[in-house]
Length: 224
View 1 (cartoon, rainbow, N blue to C red):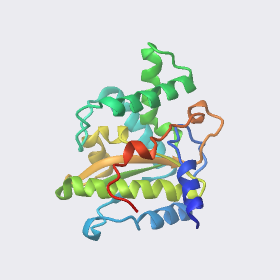
View 2: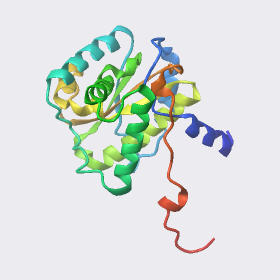
View 3: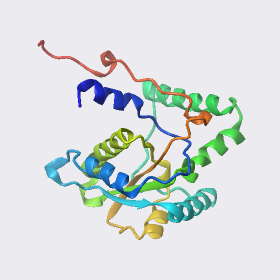
């Protein structure tokens, strides 16, 4: 693989918000995970653990999660950001309005925006979902390691033509997820990764977010 090949994979990857129902072969999922497990981690702890659903298990989870989100109270294991401010808020808003414009939700349409938000809890129709957890004892370090694993997973998936979206929203209902999947309480549920084949005709997949230029993210010190 050349640097341009890797750059192309990163450029092609996007947060997919509409999937076809076709399942991904188990062998392909195993290959994606086999690649992603090579992500670096502090002291080689490799704290990530996955619970992966397929077929009817995904459909049952989708229905249960949607019901929980419609009636329950969010209680994530990992605290939400205190706030988004400045350029981070601007980027967040821009992404949100790009999505709403793509799916025909106008400004002020709270019913429409709420309906689109609830698509998170239907996993955007994905045939598979991976719940990512880390030992609570490892705290932020374990969460950071798992962030690297999630990136590796999504890029490895893209190399197989598999679309994905990492979802903090799925992890919003921590107690429900611990009970539903029998995930021990000494593990933090960090996010879900919904994945499958993209529905390329769906308007939710018709936009792409921009990335900040290098000049905005690097403070150069010294010369080379």
